[in-house]
Image 1 (cartoon, helix red, strand yellow):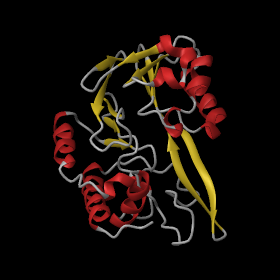
Image 2: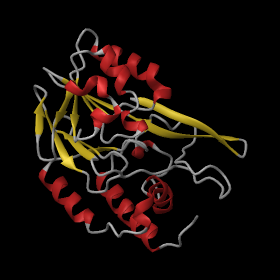
Image 3: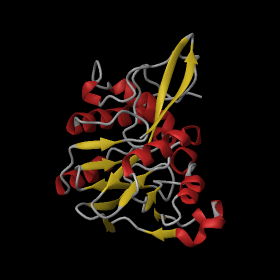
Length: 253
């Protein structure tokens, strides 16, 4: 769910994902990330189309940053029974009017949605201190927030520093793209979305990610900024090499 933000680079339209994901169980529903406020009308319409008369039960912002939590007030106003779940240690500072609706779900905990279990995972590569990842047993899908971000078309050096992809590719999976993401494309997005990885070698984190993938059957990965990944093994290798390239490459102001 959600949409892409549009920009113009040297006369060419470029986009970058700001994605949300709705997990619907037989008894309860959970929204992963709220999307950008620019897409609020789209997200509300998408929720109505999928949920119909059912309520939205949980909102899981992977961390308190605008693309991930910016639509919380509107979502909570429209769905008065919804709870905000995850590592919510400081959300009452951002949204004091909803302080009673925050429910801590630490890494390792889970919520039964009816016919599927949603697990809260450590964010092995995180943007903020209270970033979490998640996993839906029903779809076999891991939600990785700013992890595994990548672009589809590298802008010229003097263009905007945003993850981009060409129009018409917004709703495709990684396997449906004209070509799979390259190391350069993943490094370009990673080095900007997760700037600190220029200074920290996160290669060891991939062993922990692989251990989780061995434990939890996963056929899809849902990044917030990038197409849905349907080649998990291939993208794991690409992302690892991208992080190595970001860490060992020259620093760019």
